[in-house]
Length: 196
Image 1: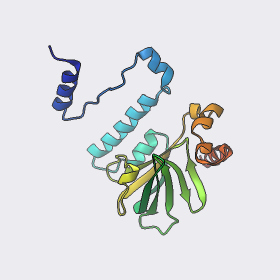
Image 2: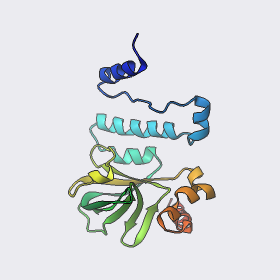
Image 3: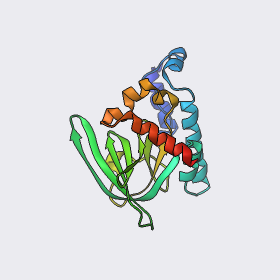
């Protein structure tokens, strides 16, 4: 009789490593209490948008942004990327210059995750929004240590779920987590809402 581990390995091998592995199984009733509703549906929609564009041999960036109700901050080239280990966190900056346009570069600051996006001195996205760097041609996420000078990327931001915008959510993972005021996030959100 095959063990569960053997079956999982066989599934991964047969699928060409396209099968995922669940290493923290949880009962459905507990999952519903611990996962933000529609997160998996959103992820599936973003993945589909990317896949369809690649099948049609076109850039997936705009469709990913549309599928996630996000915002494209810049498409450009990594001009500079630095990082260091700070108390067990990987902290650093990535500077992205727009392709063929002499605009002010976008500066991203990260502590393991991208947390602040600035154009000049102006903060244009901050946690709990999700700031993501994608390969400009494939739409695959680019992890911060993999951002190398000369890499062509697209930087997008996705809106924070309402749970993270609550007082409790902001107290856990809002701007105060990185030494800023939570009022900054609400002011930024209000400004962004006025653009739409």
